[in-house]
Figure (cartoon, rainbow, N blue to C red):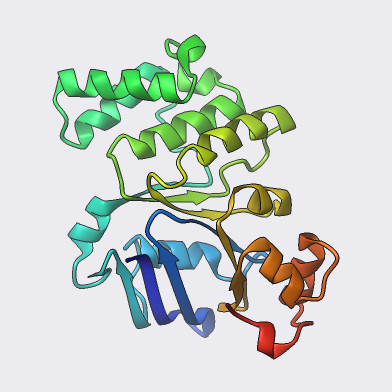
Length: 248
């Protein structure tokens, strides 16, 4: 079953066409990385798929539910960890986790259990009592993702989860994300080529609002006649690869 399915998806902002006939299919349990240069349409695509904005054309489904006709069911099945950490700065890590759990309808006892599980899974023990505004970038991102997972979503959108993090913090977060593989479906956006290579089951590259190519890392390198994935991304983004290899 597809966790995400989109066909000829379109979104316009005035005369600007942000997403221009996008086709996308992500399998249930897959970790799919969505790449593209700034302005390629990645963020707009995620907003449509997560039912934050309505498409101007085409269709999009989450686990078979139309994002426009079945918005409530779509939102219940997924969650988003945005590019900027979505945490309450003046609350502690523990308070953020229990607060968000109660917002999702869990009782106080259940919220405590959710927080305990999140603190352990994301290795937040040493900062559990600290206010979120005092956290390092790495811990703040861990907390943001942990909060997105409290609702037990079947699908998680991770928008540039390691942006601006140092190498050690990025590596620690990679291990956490890798631990999600096969348990839930993850759609990840990133500008780090090594991140897409390390984490992805498959990768899609958007160019000017369309999906230019999809495939595994090796398939894309082969399709672009490239020596490595970075060169493949550049070739595909520039349109410098054969049409017969555009998709898999």
